[in-house]
Image (cartoon, rainbow, N blue to C red; front, side, top):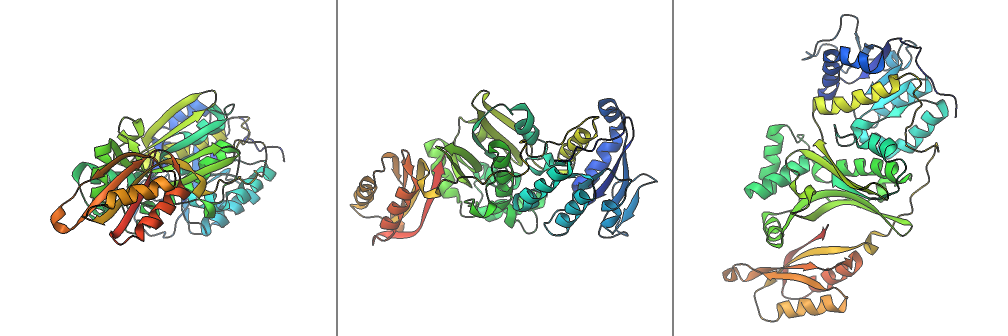
Length: 437
């Protein structure tokens, strides 16, 4: 690795900002409002030299300094020898990749909030930053204002992380909170999230679990020092969750949350994003609205929970600014992945069907004698022990739900049970299955 670039003592740090949306505007406000406080922290001024935007004529709701230049040319950031740090807040994986790679190749540190890009092409970009001795920092890419990246890289560096799980998407959590608290259908709750500004017009990344998956890949890299390919991560969203299942979960003492989780099983990693039943006594079960929370356990530290705002202009800008200040401190040495290796090894991935946990299964069946016994027999043949079972519904419709909460069993065994029961003549669409945390 080349020797790290450091700023001349007491010189101003000159920034090039790509993107002046909600987070970019929040960063401009934060650096301006807290300029004196920041100077006390790092002993130098932060100067916003150039801002890259798509439309020079678009009205802005944030005031830029008189010397700040607006541009539509990425090279005005990457090729300017006066810019020390390029801050990428434009999003996407095309132009953002070109900008970050160009900045690193030009010898500039980079700060980004782009979890999708780092999940997909992080190994390549981290290797380049390592070769150049540059910082590629990304605290804002996971869980907004929550300092989880720094916690894993620095505060828990001596720990082997045994497990990490959490609520990584505020939009999904807001929707599930409304469904649980108000009894809303998924579509109604999504509409409210969009009205509040928590969900985009196209909410696919949030409601299908993809945004949480991007973040989980970054957390796995930090916690375990291994690259887990995004394409191999099992992901399930929240679109199939119904008030019926939320009510049954509540009867058992649980709430349904979209959880990203990873744990070491033997020498392999069991990881994924999916809706899970979380017992109401757990702290995670009580994370409401658009907040995020991450629970992790180190072999020395034991368990801990980090909770806070997972999105928004100022909360996310707070994390971006933290990375800028880290790079600005005299003598800073880049610590991008938290490990000395420029290229991390590929993860040994546990077959998702081999994962063992408890399960929630709901079958819709014709209301006739022998159904419960027939299903229980199939479960027994697969070695699945029933913890609780409920059969409740309106017999006048002729169809009732039967819900099982199981003891620990492999996902493969549960899949076989579902396939067998779904083929029985008394089954009606559609069977629902969730893991239990």
